[in-house]
Length: 143
Image (tube, rainbow, N blue to C red; front, side, top):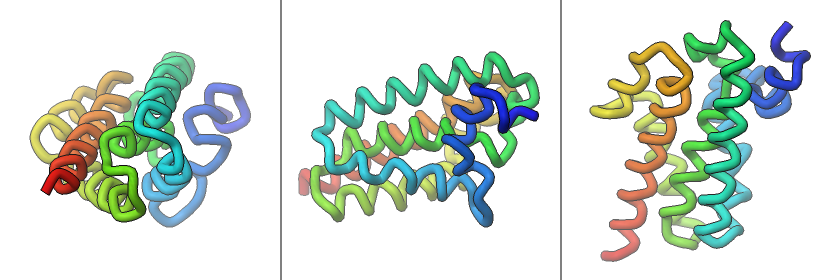
């Protein structure tokens, strides 16, 4: 079973993807402590989650359909959102709320990437949602 393999552990963030309800929300919340890091630290974490996610997905053919237990993509997208968000509790909260909204509703490029049905789609839709969420949070911090 994939969850018992190293790739399954990476894809599920050590089993966080098996939590119910809303495993994507759990996966996103798991990386919220990264908000304590400077923006560049969150960007490095986003890159690490992204590379680890592509590695795991290449070894898990059953993950191409983005099953709910795969949450490394949420971790990557949320870390990217935190990298851009203002370094304040409200910035992290706004990034989290916007990220979950865009990840669930899948507007524009988020939905297009989600419909690819491959590893780029699995990872890409959450990275796009993170970029949108972080960008909006950043803009709100400028006002």
